[in-house]
Length: 206
Image (tube, rainbow, N blue to C red; front, side, top):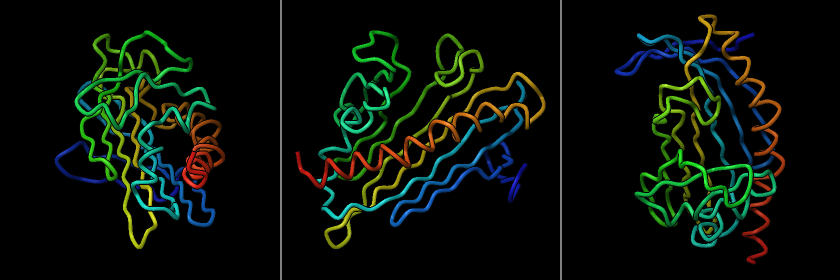
């Protein structure tokens, strides 16, 4: 089932987007979409996330906690090998257990304290995907976290993209694993925990 299916033309391969779940709760907005596009090597599919919420504190207070993802994501077994806001130009590992010595699949491209963290997932050297092993060969993801302060309040804006090559030529079949990840795992985590935990940390100022 698709809603608002359309293709975007440009210098990158044209994508077909499919609407995913959207959550609206007060100042909190979470919107997922799925996409598919063809390359010379076959079909690529994935998801995108647009997340936005506001914290009634200056950006410097939010940054203190936002920059360390371990502070607000560990409860869902997201463990990072370092403080991302301190890792510009360096790589890190995301694992489901603490102090995992495995390879680093992520790199921090840019950090502007109190404003911005940009993360890239390079094409894994072994050709696999960090999200869906065995479906790699392309960059598995690109992620941006931004803070915008106005009148003492800070809007947190997040964009995330995840992608992998498909093992089938059928778009709908290829998108099913992504729908399951988004609707049963990623969307609930952001809606029910990640945003709530970050807000609580900032407001409590611990």
